[in-house]
Length: 334
Image (cartoon, rainbow, N blue to C red; front, side, top):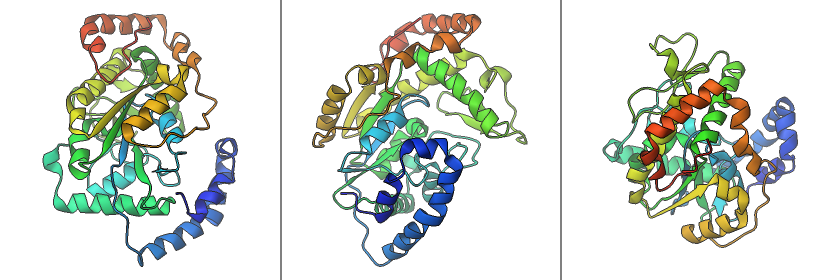
């Protein structure tokens, strides 16, 4: 059960307040929650860390519903989903595993693929112990299962499996059209929020997004760079992610797909099936307001007519590949 004192302090602040008054909440964390975290970290030096058994990893594309699903599953009493730390644990992955993972929080530029051969005994021990420490800091215990949601791990699944051979995998997806529209909008917002940050998708189909800052010397092609690039590149990213997951997911003990459209229509049924697949007792979740089917129709407002035509051409050219995917939402809305 979740037993950390800071958890109760954090949960006393409504999520809406944390979002609306982000600056004030950061001050609250700094002067109220962090001293308890520091004390708890110090106390961990004098206790044995629990083993991480059957951890759960949520993967998919960016804007593929991984955050929403992680927030819901984090409410389960048998699951510890880090929320006080970087909620995707990207800096922790980079530090503990000594890997490169591009994200605003890591300040890394590239996100190359990793294989099982990249796992060493030192990396395995470092990541397992580091995540166990995070789990305890976040209020978990030997009775909870560690949950990490990260769309960055789609091209590193053999690496993840090499460290956690008993891991379970949850694949979250939205249909290709709404995913492309949402990602186009997100990259535009991030450029404004994080001082000119751009996202570049390398042509190599095994690579994830690169984070290109204004002072970077990395050569980039405009049509593959966002904001401003060709939306067919966003579609190519969506396809490469789920093709790779299809190829590599079978190594995991359990794999369960969560298609966001089905999730929005009947969340209770999806969670019941998910719990069964992951060997978890059934619980009822407090679902967020943004769980609604209308979000799948916003692409008409986001994509220009020219972009819709470009996306349509991509879908027609790759129709068989898209519709044959096992773990993705293969609905085509255009």
